[in-house]
Structures are given as structure tokens and as C-alpha cells.
Length: 202
Image (cartoon, rainbow, N blue to C red; front, side, top):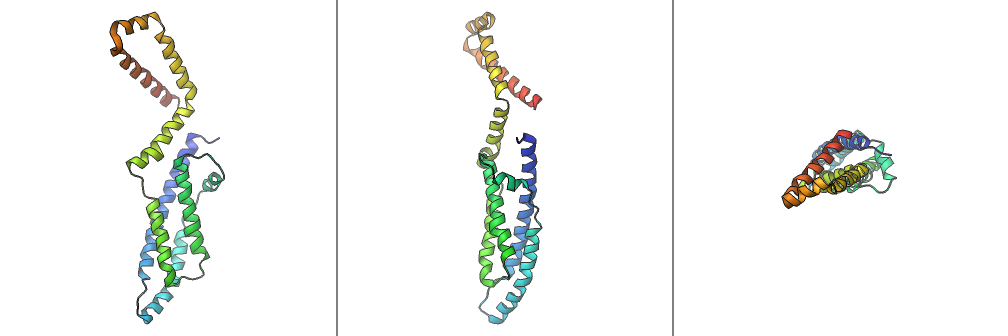
């Protein structure tokens, strides 16, 4: 069973992969930009010759990106949260559309350059850091849900304790005398107690 530590380690390694793959994408795009087809045959012939060198360099760049084995293990599993699914989609794109493509190319023709550039640009676009809404959806909500799931029994116990306390005469009298104004502070104290306890046991 995967622990929170395993997940944190996987995400940390994925950040390294993403950073390296984005650097490689930018370097590859720089080289590919040089291979702009012209309407002058002598120049295009020289570019075609240079394209062989460019492909060798790009292939070396791409194959130099370390791939952690956990990607392949997670691909065979189901029931992943959205955050992990997004990561696996990004990894799959890198493997099938970029890594496999450059490794299968015997040579690079000028007519192939735009398509290869588009692949790197797509990866750069898809691997961008999410905005605030994306961070909430793909990062914070999964963390909160995982934390609640791991500590479900403790939370239920705390709720039961709160319900028991509310039935004690002293607490009932306090609620009757002070009204609903005291209910919110008591609820805040209970929530703070639950959160502090979760962090402590974690």
C-alpha cells in the first residue's frame, strides 16, 4: 500500500523530471528554429545536412532525461486521483510523442521539423505550473481528501466525543445560558484540536 511518504517522493521526482524535460524541450526548439525552410535550394540543402546533426543532439537531450520506474508501475494501476492522472498523461506524452518519435527517426527532414516543434511546444504548454484554481483542484483538494481518509476513524471518534460532551448537563446549561454565541467558539476549538492531533500523529 502506498504511503504519504511514497507519494511525496514520487511527486518530488516528477518535479525533477518535468524541470529537466522542459529544459530539453527549450534546447531542442532552439536547434529546430535554425532549420527553417527557405525558398532558396542551396540553403535548404545545407540545412538538410545540418538537420542530421540536430537530430543526434536532440536524441541525446531527450534520452538524457531520467525516467523513474514508478511511472510504469502506476500506469498499470487504476483509481488514481486527478493529480496523478495528469502526471501520467504528461509522462505518456513525453514517452510516446517525443522520446519514441526521435528514437525512431532515421533522419530529420525539413518537412518534419514543424511537427516535431509542435510536439515540444505542446509538452511545454501541458507541463506548465497550474494557476491558483489548478493548484486547488490538483494539489490541495487531493491532499485534504487523503488526510481525511487516513484519519477517518480519529475524526469520527472526535465527533462522537463532541456529541457526548453536548449531552453533559454542564455543557447543555452553558449552551442554554449563553445561547448560540458559544457554539461557534466551541466548534472552532474542536476543529483546531482535530487538526493539531492529525499533524501530531502524522
